[in-house]
Length: 470
Image (cartoon, rainbow, N blue to C red):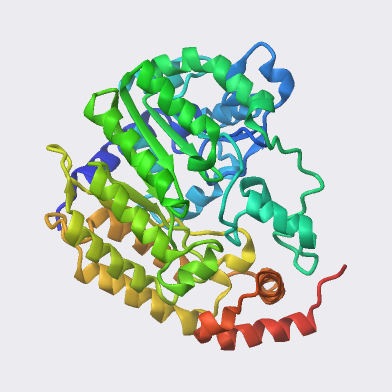
């Protein structure tokens, strides 16, 4: 099978960057930023943990929402060939061998232009960068409380912790909130104020903007951005929004109308909607508390039928995805038969797309705490289904790059063997966390995932032998 356009570009940029900039250089550290304004935190991709934005750095430099001193020092480390520890996800993939493509390689290819590349290599590591791509979270208001999420990203989760307190029977993901300073109102948030101060300068060179959450359709600033662009167009901008698609249909109808107007009138270059799903059916509803698949599907089809824009699924591949991932893959084939290609003369892509990064924290959701002999067959079944339905020329099939991305998840699970101590902690936390969650949310994990019974009993035995020390 010959390389696709995307695969060839990744290979070509990878060779250039490694020969000229070094083996650990990642453009994302300069030209990508995610900002969590409700908590005043930032990072440059979703693998490293976000770090605090010092208010002192914002006083004279609102671009410190991205250009923190901590991030500048990580840029210097990369230019010197070092590996920031927050980027361990990519180092893990790359350590598996030269044929494995990490997200660092993918990001470098997707961001690369000679101008941006030269700016990073030839400028001072202390320089302030107006990034090519920003992902921004204006607040944490959200109608979902996904178990592996956190109260600082979800008001629903926050209220649950306020009511019941942190989960004290686990080592990972206790979800304490006492230490957090969250700005609940956007209009009273100094980090939101700093963004709007930066915005007139930022918008001049910004190429991609992605609004996330929380749930952005519930945030005042999301609609303010859309109104701002409608009044002062940015025809070069790719605008993206993350939505759980689980809000009231009237909000998704409003969003579809706005998107159609902005794209049809050329006020933005393009628009992409991102959503999330980890498997299908009641299992998906268990993982993402608040999800109603009937409402979700209505919103999904409403959006696609009333715009000419794609939807990309951000799959958080976790311990509950393992046994029934094939069911979601079958849905992708079903949807692709309906919606086909998103027209691009150079690189045609599906209107319904997906990516499969794996979750590694909190540990109780990590696929690698499962016994390999019992659970790897499920992974191979899903991978084989993808292989049988991979064809870059068919709109109702999987692409080669999608297959490769999932294959690396399967290979990583097969080849990763945790220490006995990490397995004890992860499995003990699994037992205690889901018992606690089921009691708080009036759910029943084993009735939804009966194939997990043997693993659950193993975790119960470990909890009895190695109870957590309070």
